[in-house]
Length: 233
Image 1 (spheres, helix red, strand yellow):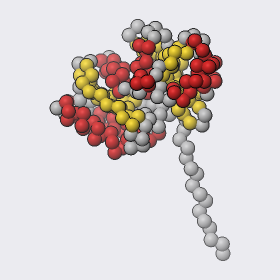
Image 2 (cartoon, helix red, strand yellow; image 1 turned 135 degrees about the vertical axis):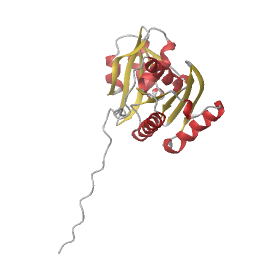
Image 3 (cartoon, one colour; image 1 turned 60 degrees about the horizontal axis):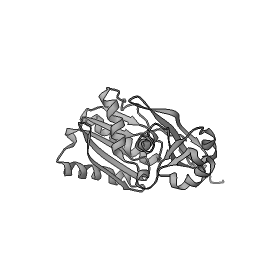
């Protein structure tokens, strides 16, 4: 049994896969409540399947980009499970999983996943299928919608839960080059994360829990401490 965990954004996801078959999947809006909702949701899924954590043979986790707090919760939980169960851990780019999910919209075309990065920017990456591998054409990076569109030279599928916010500008700039997924296809599904992770697990391509870190494209904002008040004499 493989457990996939995605806490990259306010949309959280879990999936359980066994023998390359998805047994259960859950996606829900958790806001900033990853800490309190993740493990109870996992416990609920396993109870429905009549399985236990001890049945897990591998953990797959979305490593970002995304929410600082959400990614810390997901990575921390995944590492804790891998350590305690002594099973392999694999970290997968959130944008890789999101783009992989949209690949069937127009098979053979590259897929660009976009995510809100704040400060007027988006996080984006372009992936494509190469044989049996899902590989980056353009790795994860920060961009504006305008600069991203300037880099697109051929028909490309666009996806991501943030897409509805920027879809009009993308369509206006790229016209027929932009193929936009919509509706339910915009919601990240952890089963696709599980499938990508399972490919690496089968190849014994594991991550070291001690060194696996969230993929942050921008350093977190840290408020400088105020100068201590010095009483005048």
